[in-house]
Image 1 (cartoon, rainbow, N blue to C red):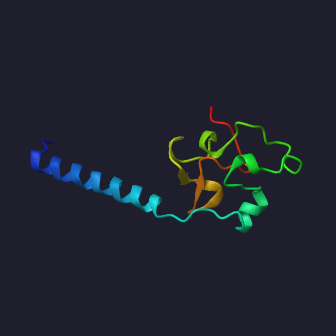
Image 2: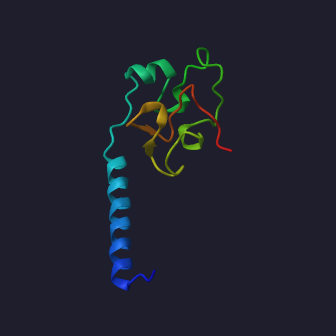
Amino acid sequence: MKTSRRTFLISTIGVASSLALSRQAFADAPKVAESDPTAQALGYKEDASKVDKAKFAKYAPGQDCGNCSFYQGKASDPYAPCPMFAGKQVAAKGWCSAYNKKA
């Protein structure tokens, strides 16, 4: 099967548009509030340095969402989606009890 240059260009533009739109959708997703019921259940803090170490003994300095395996962005992104908080973004400097260090 032979693909024309026109078909290739149209397909490439379609894929590029889809990627751009999906990235925009993530950027518009709401941020998780510490008052959110799921956030409270997981002990989410937007600033990991404010984690109650007595209540969450699992927390260790240096742990934050940006270096968690669930964080769906680059470590340099200030906010990114997390599957623990469906459809919402967490702070890269945040922390919750579901923290799992990236391999």
